[in-house]
Length: 147
Image (cartoon, rainbow, N blue to C red; front, side):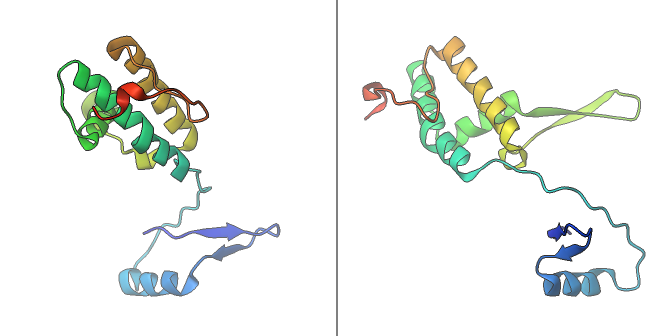
């Protein structure tokens, strides 16, 4: 279970929604020994980044893939790109690969999501000969309308 909080300048931890925290602890952990781990909250992928990805990057990728004969939905393209760029090897204690998993874009920090977008942009240019505009860039998109 995860809960959020804030540490004051004095070093005191205040748990956000303390009532829910107390209820969850009581319901699930009463009488049990626990380990408490506190981590700094990480800044994950932002809503504007996500909107850019779904409303700009994926539709342009969809057109580029259609041009080479692949009619895929945005969801299918999302899964393809995750598999290509977000595959994570799982290793045992000896450093031997025992399998892999595909990370979700919701796990990515803002900077990691920017790296993911850069990889997609590079792939689109090299293999599909298409330009994925940057979020602050305007391009003429006649080619991508009504395809």
